Image (cartoon, rainbow over all chains, first blue to last red; front, side, top):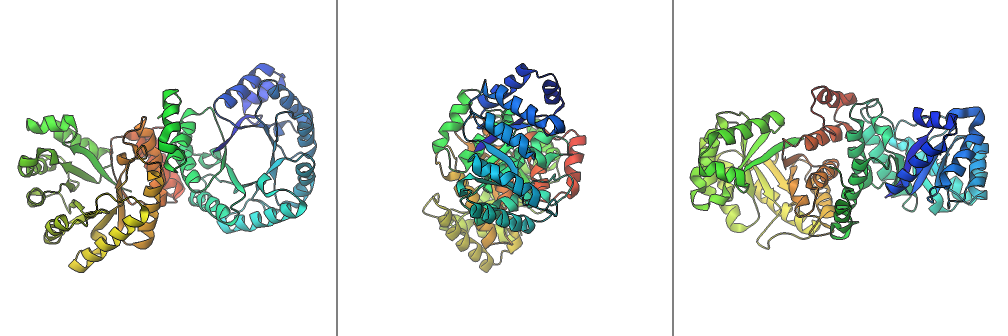
Length: 266
Length: 266
């Protein structure tokens, strides 16, 4: 399972405050902790700064890569900010998070994917906004994948995100997410499927519990990568258990090792 | 989700001790707590007593139904003990746990299912012992279901148990359980699928964690009923979360109610 650490996101008050003051220590501590806890990528998002997004994102890349060596997931819809981050990047092949089938956005982001040979998260969304059904997602995914391939993006570099919506706001949104993951995986077996775990639980109580159950359901439905809190020990433990259940952990040796290392939390 | 409370099992030392001394209080307390926690059936097992199994099981039925009104799951391979329990039963339609395709066992248990109009758990096992593969399980299930139907058992009264084996003793046993549940459900849509959750984690550490992940995986694969510890609040919470994710909980109203009642544990 590929884990993208989601915590350096200026939508979070504490991160916004640290960025306001250019407080390196808080950011670096969080970056290090996420990597130590198992994040294979560090997501960085400074969208909230709007006018300063370019400089803030560039600053983040510089600061985070002083203390980590995992690649970035550059979470922005501002092409200029993404490019500034890509230029400053020294931490291995980055992820551009994200492109969509919205025409303007697609045309802005695509050249960056190609020029910087980045991975790209393709969100199942187009000019009609958030899709409602599984089939709408598949149609958009099909359009996106075919178009990206035609433009020269390698199939291994595409990650599809079905766009998970909160189960508290739509009774069927859990089923929709799970079915979309299954269908995306069936239709594009070489493309990785990614999603934000936390999205499912927005607006309900005991969010961590809902996130855990959703993570299992998503994994056994074919999820390859999760944007999530890698420092949430229970969520990480859930990954180790589910990998064992999926036959990906020979005689549960990794699970047992994690237990001995004190990394399993029930 | 149908929950069968598994705790009154004389394989457990504390239960064995209580039964040795005919200690009603301990047993009744446990029975009440299981029902309160959400068990729809109370499993009772006195197999360890061998010679006294008949009287011990009968005693259990009498004692438990003094304080609970949910039906029993009579967990025995001793036809005489099962019949004693069935005769003493006043708590609604019971479950006979279990019949198999082992010829002798089948012939002994079947008449009880018919005579007492009980539900029956049909274990995917025959004279060749524990099945290894998913397909072996399906073949046995097919034989069992067809045979039970032919003998006059109603399809609604059959619960198929794929026989979950510990993932710590076979890397593929998690996949096997999950795939077996899916295939049983696809092949026999009117038959309920049941399994023991705890079986998956035998021999690995942090069993509750493994059980939780397995429960989600099993539920979204089609599991209708679980033999489990209904007093394990996290496991019960996992059911509420997973039901919401499966679209079975309108706007998460039940999930939110459980939260307000203090019944969700993360």
